[in-house]
Image 1 (spheres, one colour):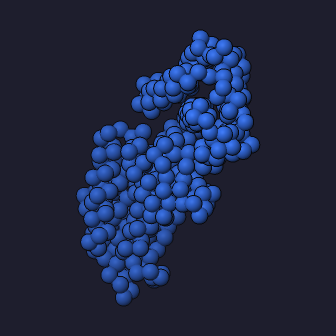
Image 2: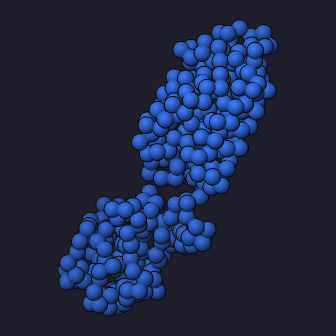
Length: 359
C-alpha cells in the first residue's frame, strides 16, 4: 500500500493530467512510472489518443528499451506534418537515469510542437527491492519537472479499487454484490492488471444473468477446491486442531502467490453463512430440496452442507462468523500478519467448537 502522501501526490497529478486531456492543452513532456503498470499504460494510451488523430503514423516516433541521442534530437526537432504536434514516445529507455547534458539542454529549447511521453516499467532487483527508474538530481528530471508533468502511479487505496471495480462491471452492464466485491479484492490484492483480467473471466462466467455473486467469485477466483473447505470445517466441527492445521498446510500449497489467508477467510465466511442459513431454513419446515434451491447451493454439495449444519449450534455459527469478520478486519488494517491471523483464527474456531458443539 502506498503512503498517504504518495497517494495524495498521485491524485493531484492525475487530476492535472485529466484536465489536460479534457481541455486538449498539453505540456511539453509527460513522465509515467511506478508499480501500478495498469495506470501507466492507461494514461499513456489516453495521451497518445488525445495528442494525435487516430491513424496518424507520420508524427509519432517510438523508442523502446534504448535510443540514439543524436537521432532522437534530430527527430524531435522535426516539425509535425500537417498536424499540431509531434509525439516522441520513450518506453523503458532509462533516459531519466542516463541522459547526457546534450539531450537535457535540447529539452530546454525543443520546439513547442514536440511532446515527449516517457514511460518506465516498474522493476525489482534480485532481492525484490524496487529499482530506481529516475534520478531527481539529473538535469533532465529538473527540466521536465519544470514545464511537464511527472506521475508516480502508486498502488491504489482499497476504497479507490472498490469504486473502480464497481464502476467497471456496471459500465459493462453487470452488478456485483458488496460481499462478492469485498471478497474479490481480498483474493486478488491491489494489482489492477490482474484484477481486470479476473473481472473479464467473472463476467464471462456469469453470462446472461449479469449478476456476480459470492459463489461466482469463489468458483472462478479463489483457486481453492470447495471439497478441501468441507474437510477443514469438518475438522473444526470436532475441534481436531491437528487435522485443521494439516488441511491448512495443504491448502497453502495450492496458492503459489502465498495469498491463502484472505482466500480462506472469504471462503470460511461463505461456508459458515450457508450453514447458518441452511439451519434456519430447515428449522422453518422447508424441504432439503427447496432449502438448497433457495440458497443457490450446487446439488453436489447440498447434502454435505445439511450434514455439517446439523453438527453446529446456531449460536456457535453466529459467533464463528463474528470471529472471522474480526480477524479479517485486523488483517486488512495491518494490525496483524495475515498468516498469524489465520492460524490464530483457526485455533480459536476449534476451541469454540470443542466447547460448544451439539451433543
